[in-house]
Amino acid sequence: MIENTIETLAAAHRANLVPGKRELIGNGHILVRADNAPDSLRELCYAVHTDASDSFPSDWLYLMIGETLDAIAEHGDDFMADTSGTEDRYHVLASWLAECPDAAWHCDQVEDFGGSIYERLEAGYRGQWCNVGQVVLAELESELEECDAA
Image 1 (cartoon, rainbow, N blue to C red):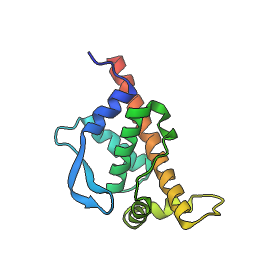
Image 2: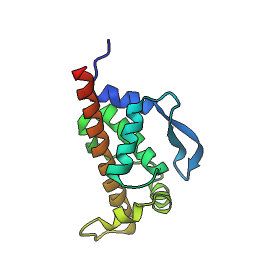
Image 3: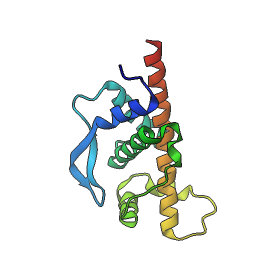
């Protein structure tokens, strides 16, 4: 039997986020929940949309959920130390700013801004990703506790 850990649970949930039909500019296909995804993944996605951003469903939030689950599966609860980005980061950040409903708000939250617009976009994206990551981690930890109690 496979031991339930934060990493295995994150990997299992990530496997249930599958490419959708539409594409995000510069980022490939959107992510959607698989038809047979567990209810706990739906609850996790709902928590991110309500607790991390207080917004309607967003393709970008699903992408961040997927990125976060990948990072947790690889690094465990130290996942925020992974600061790697995509190759075409300018294009991705511009698309995020144009398409994500609360991207501008996250960029406005960057304090003591003194760098380029690129650095502000990167910091805003990273801030939103960290918010999403905290909610995802809390949901996974709660789910693990439920599994251990059962």
